[in-house]
Image (spheres, rainbow, N blue to C red):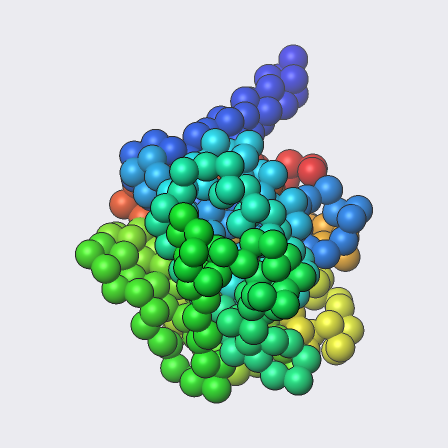
Length: 319
């Protein structure tokens, strides 16, 4: 009976986390997609939504399936002010055309600001990416009115220079500050993002090996660090040129003194090594640790005491 009671308590606390609505007062992070590019990991691809005082303001990445999760979350597409891209791999950007088309069926009039990295030989710059989709000769040229300014609102894409090695201020408006920094993701242009909303701060590592050692400073004293956990500790050197192993995530978390680490971008190879990954991170980091799931809500900053973090999904729970 005691064992059954423990199991019921675990399930109830799980429901409390995944049943929570992010549209309450305060600042909230919603995981729209906790997975990567695979079709057998059980998750939507990379996507995150930041809520503030009942309004969904910022999208970070729009991987495949993330838009459907945004609908489930009850977010109003007209409230989104910014879309921020860590990089333009398919599993981080595929749902952008679906987002733009969906606005046709709303009364959106607010311009949409899109920020992402400059390009190189392998990847287009963000402005080129958006024009390639919605320009006069773009793939979805029938939506060109949203880019050329003749529609009910205008898409405004912006490049963030990846050759700059220090944090770059992107937005500073009242209590909202958004910064980006170039990170190492093999040969691909990539960014990490930091969003500060009053006392609430969230850092998104994006896909990175952290070879350039910028994350620990960039994430300094953040409320939440969303760290992409795509590989296990035992991954080969090729994978580690693209992604951080768990030991690196733990080291960053300690050095940056973050309150809460959320492990996302989970792939089958890291899903299969959950226990060893947790053990590796716990060698250094003793703070709050969460393995992300789709549509999960996480309170951040001064509002995190409204969400009993210790009631989040137990780390030993076998997903």
